[in-house]
Structure formats: structure tokens, C-alpha cells
Image (cartoon, rainbow, N blue to C red):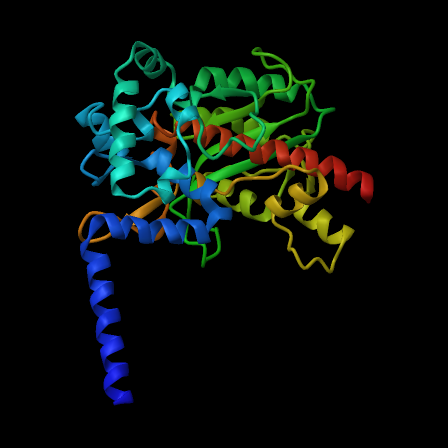
Length: 347
């Protein structure tokens, strides 16, 4: 009798599970319970969902690109005005059931069709930057053509008294191998402190788009200038990937990763730029996957749990992601400069 009773309980539990999986409303409630259990990570999930996914009125998930193409009827975070985004509860991405999601979709459809929403859509996409709400916004001067690159490089050559913090972003890289002979430098970022002004105001970081023709070649004289002191985080990596492009970087001013090892050789938290800047200069950093990661689609078209990064060159090239990409890149350069100053004082 005990064995039969236990079998009956198993069968009932299995039937209940099948009902949950086959009933959308109950399935959403199950997801809500998971969302509540993972509450500390809600901001990361919501940021990714806001940027990447739209929820149609019938509860299906579509990409933001598809939602944009189909218009405001497929309502999602990507189609809302700043005001609608600000008023929407981010927890609804993980906590809402099917009925509540459909109601929210209908409400935001009306907001998306309003004159305020139309005005908001006319603003640059980067005007709202999911994932960067906890970070400072770094002022940026973009260099995206050879003529501007030559002008800015000449200004940098005239400021050898400054310490220039540099970083690169690289695509087509196998992290399990040496950077020698592989990788493609997408951009170089430079922060030279609060006093340097290259024409758009003091204290701005440089975003040098090396995918544009002639830009890297125009910056080569400054990168190879020995009297221009440059600071890096993990200098060996950046030097190798630039050497792959025929740039022999000199003018070594410091490596904050090795400076940190000199300061504390027994750190359990490691020597990443994110960990060091958060601890030593109180500057938290949002990871690339948190900002740009997209859920891998299951076979039925719904988003899965695995988070993937799009190709990095597409993040830089697309007008939808470029503003966030630029901010992500220059944030590292300024963080390296601040970390260098702090470690210099401690050493």
C-alpha cells in the first residue's frame, strides 16, 4: 500500500508539472518564482531584456530589430520613450504572468504612439543606456576619419608631459591562444586626464575607430613615440594585438595590473581592471555580457538561459549599440588612468 501511494504521488506530481508546462499563465507564474529567487540579479536581466527583447501582445518574444521593423504594435523596451521606460517596473520582465504582460503591452502601445514617444524616438538611441545606470557617463571625443586622427595625434604629440591611459577592443580573438598573429583591433581609447582638450572640451576620453580607413595609420606616430608615456592594463596583450597591425608601441608609462601585483601580491580577488577600480577608486564596472548579452534562442523561438555576445564588430558598427559600445570602451581607459594615479600614490 505504501509503495502504491508513493507511486500515486509521483504520478500526480508529474501531471502537475505537465500542466504547468502546457499552461502559459501558470508557466509565467513559475518564471515569476524563479525571478523572485534571483532578485539581486534582476537589474542585469532587465537591462538585457530592455535592450534586446520585445514582448508582443500575444506573449511571444521577438528581437528588438524585428519589433522595430514591425512597428509599435509589437511593444517592447526598445520601442518606448524615455518616459515610458522610466515609469515601467523593471521587475515585470521577470515577475509578470501572461495576463499582466499583455496588459502592460497594451498600456505601453498607447505610450509608444503618443507625441512624446515620437519625439523620444527622434533622439539618438544612446540617449537611454541600459546597463550604465550605475556608472558615470564619460565625455567622449570620437575620431572616425583619417584627417581627424592626424589632427588629434598631433595634439597628443605636443602633450608629452601628460600620462595617457590607453586600451583596445579586439574582435576575432581566440582567448585560449596567444594574441600574437590573431585578433583585429576595433578601436583604441585614450584618457589623458581632466586638462587635455582636443577641441570638444577638456577632460574627454578619445574613442579612435580603427576600422575606418587610415585612422590607425594616422595614430601610429603617436603610439610609436617614446616620449609619450602610455599606461595600460595588461600591456603585453595590447602591445601584441597592435603589433599584429604593424604598430610597434613604445613609450611605456606603466601597467596597472603589474603595479597592483607590486602593491599586493596575495590578492584573492585577482587583478582584473573591474575588481581593482571598484576596490581602490570606488568605480564599479558593468561587464560586456551584462550590457550586450542576448539570450540564446531555443528551437521554439523563446529565449533560453544561455547568454551570448553578438560579434563585437557589429556592436561598434550598429547605430543601435554604438553609443553603449563607445561608453563601455572609454570607461576602461578612464578607469585605467584613475587606477594608475591611485597605485602610484600607494607605491
